Length: 637
Image (cartoon, rainbow, N blue to C red):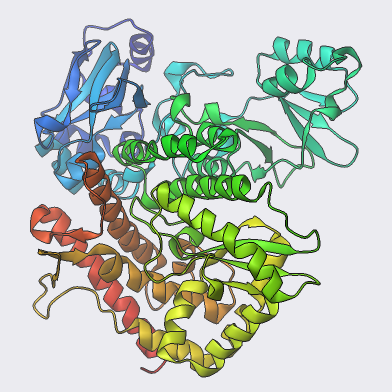
C-alpha cells in the first residue's frame, strides 16, 4: 500500500488492499519505530475490521480482554458502568487500548463503546504478547507508557486536522511537549486596548484567550473575563483590557509535557497557563484546559471552580462524591499514580481551603494575628488516595499572647476538623489535627519543639518527625510557613545522628517478603493480607524523606525525592517504577472497594492477584529491600 493510498483511506476512501495491517499501523507510534520485518511477523494474526457506532467493544463483565485494538478511524468512549452514560475518556485515530487490562490480565473498568464508526486493527492477545517479546520498543511502550493515555481534546482547534493527531502528538503523556498543542500565532493586545476592540479581535481569531502586554509583565484575558468581568460592566465602552486581565498568571515552559501541564492546572485549579520559552523574551501563547481533555465536564479545573463557589458543607459533600469517578476514569485511561494522586490531593486541598474560608470568614480574629494552616503526611506530599484521614496543624505569630491566640484559633480549627470529617476525611486516630492544642502553636513554640525532637531523638520524637517533616501550607500566611520550615530543615540536615536514628527507625519496617520469596501477610479484623501502604509504600516514603533531609532538598513528593538516591546505589528509574506500581495497585484496590460500596482500605489479599501482578509486586518489594540496604550502608546500621 502506498503512502497516498493510506492518506486517502484515512480521509474516508477505503482501498482494495486495505487489509495490509503493517502498512496501516507502521505510521502510528510506537509501531513506526518497530522493524517492519518484526512487525510483520508479530501481526500475522491481526486483522482490520470495522467498528460500528454503539458497538460495545469491552466492558467489565466480559472478563480479561483477549484483543488489543489500534484505532485507524472513528472514536471510542469509555463510560463508567452504572453512570448516566457521560463518557470519561475518548480515543481516536492512532490510539490503542486496553493496555492496562491486557498487561494486568484483568477486566477493563469502563464500558468501552464506539461513539463514531470507523476501523481498527485487532491483535489477538497472543500476538500482543509476541510483539512485546520481539520488540523492545513496543515492550517499552507498554510497560513505561501505560500510564500516559489520558483524554484528548473534545474538539480539535487550531490548524491541525483531526486525522493528523495520531501517534505521540495525540497522547497526553510525559514525552509530548506543550508546544505541540499551541497555535502558531497567539492573539497579543496591549493592556490599554478597549474591551469592545478586544472582543472583536478575539472573535476574529477564533480563540479563547488573549495575551495582554502590560507595562512590565504579561497577563491573560479570557473569553469568560470579557463576558462576565468586562462587557457586563456598567460602562463597558470605557473599560480597558488591563482592568480585567489576570496578572501574574501561572507560567510553564513550552517543553513541559502535556501530562505535567494537566497536573499543574489541576493543582492550581486554573483553566489557563501562560506558556513561555527560555529562548524567547515573549510568551509563546496560552494553553487552556480544553486542549487537554475531551470531556470538559470531568476536568479538575471545573471542579475547583465549583468548590470555590460552594456555600456550605452539603455542596462540598456532593462535589466530594465525584472524586472516585474521576479516579476510576484516570485509572482506566492508564494514568500513573503520581498525576492521579496530585489531582486528588489538589481537589482535597481546594475543599479544605473552602471549609477554612467558610469557617474563618466571620471569625473575630485580631488583625495582628498571623496564622497558617499546615497539612502533613500524604496530603503534603500530594500523594493522597481514596482512603485518607486528616493530618494538620496551625502555626501562628504576632504581638499577641500565645495562649490568647490559641484560645481564638482552637474553636475554629475544631470546627474545620469536624467539617472535614463529615466530608469523608476521618479524624486522625493519633489526634494530629489543628484542633489539638498541641498542634496549634506559635512560631517559637514549634521551633522549641523541633529542637527538642532533633536534639533528643526519642522513639516518640522520631515518629513525630516522620509526620511533620512532610508539610505544606494550605491556607493563611505562606510567609509564616516558610519561616516554620526553616525552623527544622537546616538543623535536621546538620544533625547526622538524628538522621541516622531516622534511618534505623525506617529499617524496622521490612517489605512483606518471606525468606523463601513468598508474601508475608498480616491479620486485621478477621482478614489476612498485605497492608500495601504500611508494608509496601512506606519503606520508599521513609527512605526518600531521609535522602531529601540529608541533601537539604525542598522536594515534597516521593517520586521527586527518589531521584536523589545515588545512581550507584539504585537506578532512579527502578525506584520510581516500583513505587509507582505499588501505589497504583493500592489506588485501584481502593477504587474497586468504593465501586462495591465498601469503605476503602489498604489491605490487599495477594492470593486475589493474578500471577503477573504477584510477580511484579514481589519485584517491587525486592527493590524496596535494596533501598533499605542502601540506607543501612549509608548510615552504618
